[in-house]
Each structure stands twice: as structure tokens, then as C-alpha cells.
Image 1 (cartoon, rainbow, N blue to C red):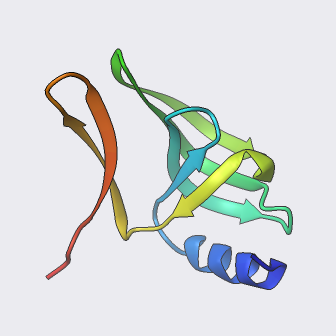
Image 2 (spheres, rainbow, N blue to C red):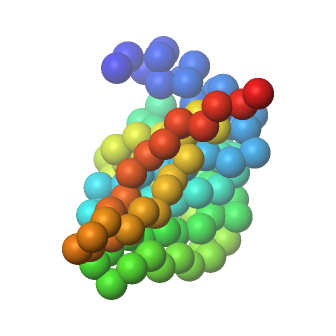
Length: 102
């Protein structure tokens, strides 16, 4: 992805009330208000909340304002995707579900 595409995408995300950020750490997400970014995709997120989906269940922790290094980010989602925590027969799974407005 080119630097111009990243800048354009993050410029749109900065206008949203909340973004979801998938980290390279296994099953860990951050949600919060994107307040700033640079060309290396380093992000500053306000009112950040860490969400971890593991075998022991879902855990979350409020972090406040954080800086996330761009190299540790897998994707940044805006309001089109909602994180869902579902229970399968044997273990809990995480999946994304698009919700329809209307």
C-alpha cells in the first residue's frame, strides 16, 4: 500500500468517533479515537481500550492515550466492522460481522 493511500485512509479514520485496531499480538485489538498519525502508520489513540480474546474468555482494559508503533498494526477498521464475541461448542471464537444500517 502506498504512503498516499495510507494517509488518505487514516485521514478519513481520524474523523470517526472510534476505530478498531488489530495488533500483531495474538487476538489483541485496541479501540478508541484516532487523534494523530505519521507516514510510518504510527498512531496516537485517545480513550484506548485493549480487548483480548483468548481461551480463558474476553478481557478488556482501559489504557487512556497510547501511541502504537506502525510495525505492530495488522489493520485499522472504521465503523463498517463490529467485533463480535461468539461461543462455539468447544471454545470461544472471535469473528467480525458487518452490520447493516437502515
